[in-house]
Image 1 (tube, rainbow, N blue to C red):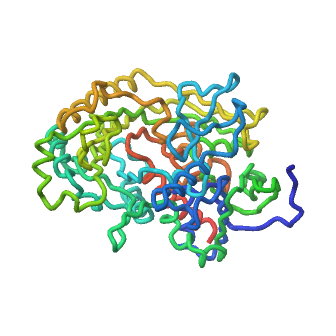
Image 2: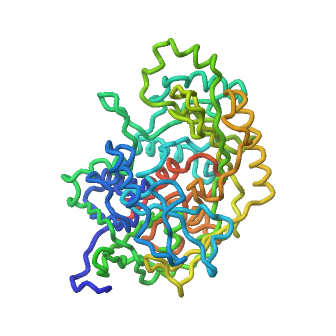
Image 3: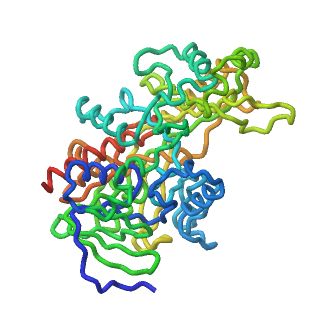
Length: 504
């Protein structure tokens, strides 16, 4: 039974809704540059480990990893078609299940995670910088590049950890022969959010890395509090200004009010516009311009002679992990390639066909698509979802230009595969269902002016609503193919500094 708390309203300077990488970036920058501010972070999902926001790949026990992934797959569900269901999406996520009234038209693989750390507890940690028209033109280069550098610091990004992994040099050399580029568009090691411990152990950056000292028990509670299983039902507004938020403890059903002059909604690209809609915000662009990155995949195997040539060198076996290479986006080829060396084949092979770790290569090409206003997530205030929030429905389709880009990406993957070796099966490169990328953008997009085509300004503050900021991949306004986390964390760092200017 839902109850209303009789305790007095608690007061904070900033409430952050969502504990993913972007929400954590707000908390970290506020702590570093204005430590006197009182900050509350709320997350609808549970804590997965003692260290808040830890990447589940860092959990040594496979049973603990599986339990953490299951705990991220939303609230307990029933057979009702209105509720989300676990799988068959990526581990740690749950799919939105369509029903007759609210179909997920055109995006069958739309998925989310509910846990402390958000998708930052499950992501691949790829952090390429945006290139050419992926960049946000109305942010000057100096401002954007400085913010991207700050994001790399917060996420602990490096391109060096797997640079000498088995066969990585061979892979990059073969790719460079097929995609001869120079400068920032050249074939290179993928920048990844990872750290190497003194014993050589690889630690993948979760939200705990972004939070930094705030993830430690000695700092939490001192001007910063993190509450898990706490839902933000709506932001409170008075005469166009934020006054606080209505929260719900999902473990007890208790609803209560928290006062704050600033609220940052960083709930992901689908739930951030949902919170704004539930708060009575009806900007034309809210939920519109929803953008996905169509993903073309395949897998190949390095030639036997290439494997044998390196088998006797000291490099093989020296690295405990296989490499990840990057084919950057260009305006001429509007997609980017994530080339992952695998320790096992994703396709069953003959029993006597042993795979040398790193010699099987997964090819994933992400495509940039046109930003189309009609692609959108909508909300029904008369029907609620599993959390009691306005139920979502998604309308999404590809343009003829998008389809042409996808065909070009398939050709590029074919070229890359032939340059690298032999395809593992006879299937040509194929397109995953829409939403599989988990790289949804544009639903609360940033704009230079309040012209009806954006939700927030260059500082991430929602147009016409003082003290309300949005964060996450949904803020990115451009058509991109590169993994978006680095950009969204960079924009969060800029937004946090705008809040500091506002409150101090």
